[in-house]
Image (cartoon, rainbow, N blue to C red; front, top):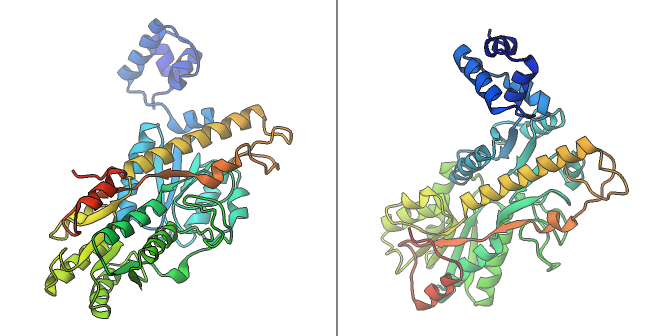
Length: 395
């Protein structure tokens, strides 16, 4: 096996010069660099990535925890996230909690043993805030609140819920049925502030499930408009059969329904089921999807959807992840984390639990929602005027 000593002999330079070139951690003249790189190429020398990572104290690997990749939303987001991380020199290690019973704890253990640089948490967790803030390593939350000081990125679901309700109200809908996950599984953190979509309204308890904020905003806006609404639960959002059952159920249980809002897959199946039963979409039944993945183009009609900006979300998550990693490394190397500094992150060493910017963990980064125009909802001047402020996507 070719080693650095072989490269040094071939290039006629010292071993330390080869090390500087390989690790990019010091000055080397252009002439020396060319000689070393030419020798590496001629000898087919491949640097030991593990050794280089140990030298720099980095793995360049980020653990991404998602519920499943079988759901179109998470599959689409993961694709965008992998690209955003790769652009920043980071590799992705995926954990799906639906397939790994203790995957969450396993990844946290890997992070604490420095086997990865950070965790992006995008799945429901049964652990409370104290668990996550005690990990004291770089963590970024997606679409949920894990605790003060842990950056949180997510869509502006309150805006999305209000958009959906206003579109139906302006189109004259009288009875809206919502399809979504079981409300009994919503995980309340029993606080009135914090996380993406946090509200100052004490009646809206914080939850780690983002859909709660969307549904609350949707239902509140429908109530204000005097529009009847009902809710159908989808027990398992990872199973196709559950979506098919929900699509049939909504039309059987509520024959007077004239508007449906549902996750993409359920919305697409509702379009197909409605057309099979003789409904004229959208004149007699409007159907609106929430997420805006590729599934909305597979129903026979392009389904109008409230679109989550997958690329924008991924870019912001990746940016926050890099910030957390760099901040952790800086504080670890300089021992700047002291009781007098008043600063830490989820990834910091030490016992001080104060944070330099508590609002950063509470407010989070909200990515605006858009409307992907389709053929399954009614349109009029008032709706187009409403959407002018949300920059509808038409391509």
